[in-house]
Length: 170
Image 1: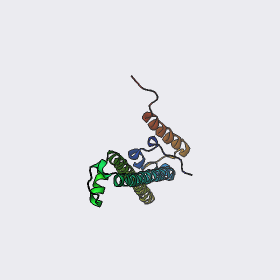
Image 2: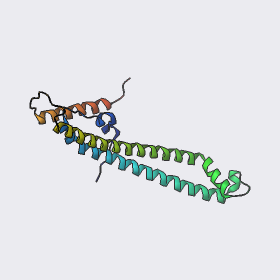
Image 3: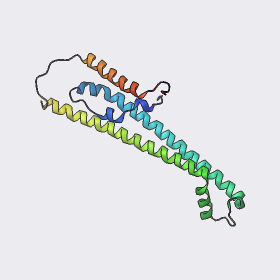
Image 4: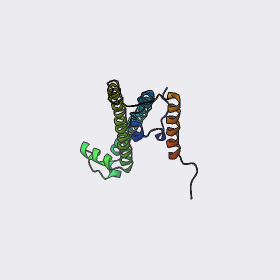
């Protein structure tokens, strides 16, 4: 079961960047990042579906209400065009439509982020190929992968902590 992904967990610009000096760490983090962004996309799709459903239900309710009481809405004669236009002009419909548009935007942005994470995977594959061909050749010293991983995680946690505000500042 997917857990809800909070916005604070996602930092597109940071997550899309590749540290070419730490390809092993980048590869280690890639599946976790991809899962995070895919989960975010799934939640955004759910929000879009719910907003669409609310919009459809509201439209049906307004349709029924206008047909049963056309005088209340200033309609002498009910035509399909007049009915559709009257529904569009109702404040509650306008608000529900704005929510739908916002949910659609969030979903499309989440899809774009997943595509970007997939592009990062391709970039990592190509950087590893270049590394295998000694493209980045130069003097190197062995490093402690576990120490590098801990530094990367601590750096990420500091970034997350910067975005979290506890209490209100006056």
